[in-house]
Image (cartoon, rainbow over all chains, first blue to last red; front, side):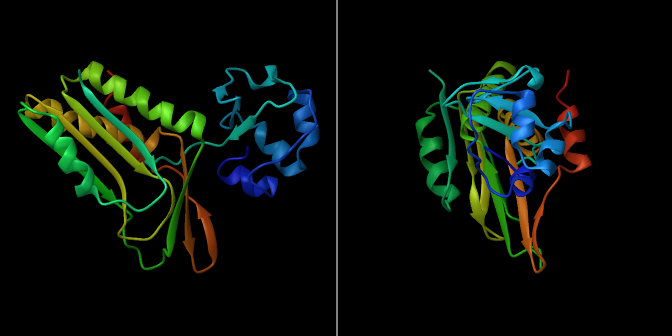
Length: 75
Length: 150
């Protein structure tokens, strides 16, 4: 799942990638502009709806949902 | 048992249809405070789109409501936020707090609104003549949030 302006960089609000994925694998599977953007510490990552304290520790298996979350703009 | 009504609405809503029943449900209260926010009319903005991430946005609003109940002496809290496409003039948020004493009701609404405006899991973009533009939080929104940090 790509939220906010990260969906523009990814070209779609969702991407389907081949599991398993760690952080390096995820970055390699993303379009280059998006891969660069996700390194920004302001962009957070959630796995199956739970925020990761350390996104570099990502371990995603088949069927998992990864969300890439840019800074919120609020309501 | 405190009454807590937290919702995300994908369609246009009429605040009065929520506030009336909410007020009726809180028998014996001393006062109710309600804030309704609308999409501000701007001659250059044709539409506003609010996106959210279901697993974080609604649980985040429930956590905010829990903090409001911890911080203020409340009888009930209504917190409703639109998502999706909106036009200028449409309601976007409605927060209503019922309490025995006015200060708790007024401050709880202020507290919830400051957090919804800058810290809730929403992403906002505006459609203007030249296309869509993502909106960043305003500096003032972060200042408003900092008021509650003690």
